[in-house]
Length: 41
Image (cartoon, rainbow, N blue to C red; front, side, top):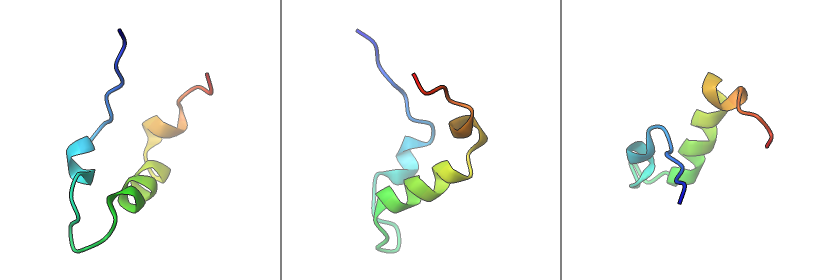
């Protein structure tokens, strides 16, 4: 069985200052170089 590991997952597991974590994740991914160089497959 294969697993994926999300870099910095712990930062997005709670509401800090009442902002939804998925928005933080989205913004963080847009500026993450490693995310941009991922292949489409």
